[in-house]
Image (tube, rainbow, N blue to C red):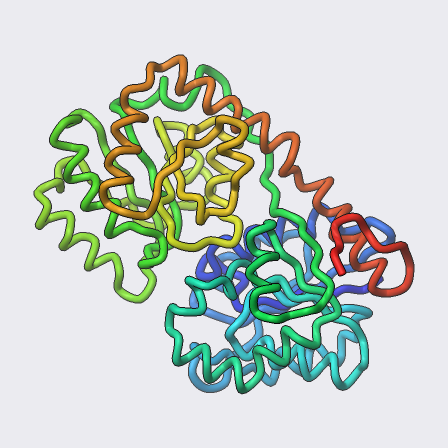
Length: 382
């Protein structure tokens, strides 16, 4: 089977999507003689981050016109000449979707779409007028004509059905690599109790609410520190820094900038807790990475990982100032042993439910089914 995967960005600017794709296709390559090519749009970090995709074959294609649209004749040409049996789109709302739609119509071959949370209710309201234009132009046709839609969670599958999309849906989560660490739980190594946020700095992540909640929490827990690590999206970092200064908590809030590789691992290793007060997510890779590192998690139900609550690996908050403040306070009251147990439950959860080899097998089974080479997988709902 020859598969071409298409996405907006193959660099850090793509957030968790390229990271998840890279691990998925490394784990899947070679299964059932699967051959994978990956196409994305070129950006300022494409060359710098290309090595992370090894040993996969990738191409960052030049964009013509506004980068926000993502029109790429080169990508369309590569799709045509690579002659895949099936294409898998990751993400929505850029012209990459139209390129895949055109390929599907021209070849009458199947394609899969993974929205990665980009068509849930909150996401559709964000930049609504732009998405209305893209939807009428190409995105709704791209979604409706997909041979299968891929939901990361039950909640995402429900969101897809709520939009009236009747395609088959496969429900398969992202995964995470195990982390080998020595010593005790992450909290034991921290120089001071530290709450870590890691991800892109965007309003949907609930960071404005987190800063306001931290100003309440820090008055009672002045020894604690909040680290905010990630890349700025649309100038949101400046607003967050201004809010931090206005709240008078500059001394306990640290903006760390984008963190990758060993630097990111060091932040996780030193964290007492990981927090994601998000309004909307597909399936956040950063939470899986925190669990893999044995770090307890504080998150909203909108993160779409109810397994974490059920397993006792996460504490629940809502994306509101008071709820975040209360959640931080409850977590700070836990003793070290309870925090360690919470983190270890997260390790167990990702080992049993979110490991890449099993996930790659499930995705490959969907490809085989769509190409008439296997039975309908258990992950698929008609």
